[in-house]
Amino acid sequence: MTVFFGTQPALATQGHGGIEGVYAHQFAHLFFLFAMGSLIYWLRDRGLVRDPGWRMIQYSALFFILWNVDTLLVHALDDQFELIEVQRIGLWKIRLTDAFDHNAVKLVYYIAKLDHLLCVPALVFLYVGLRRLLDRDRPESSAGVPS
Image 1: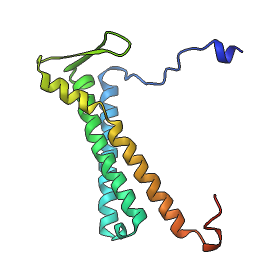
Image 2: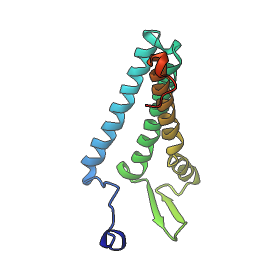
Image 3: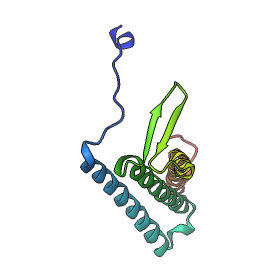
């Protein structure tokens, strides 16, 4: 019963210890961005994008690139340069304050924080691409049998 009613915070997010943690995190985003760019180059160079499965994986890599650019911007604005401050003023309300007191910066930050609009399609394209590759390579006799 303690498991269900005696809950503790899950601490599902990880804070970065000082600015060096932010730099390491930003570097990881850059590495992932360049890896996805290399994957797109490799797929196109070998002509694999003619196959529907690989084409979907290419689209996935493109959305992951866009997601990484987006998250690099958000991390730069709020963690690295501390240009944006987010204050919770209610259960469903936040206040954005920026160093320049300019609505354009706040709008860019707010839109960029909707990064799931780039990450979720990337994951869907990856799933569809892998599923198509799996279905293509599955023998005909087991095509209707779920795996």
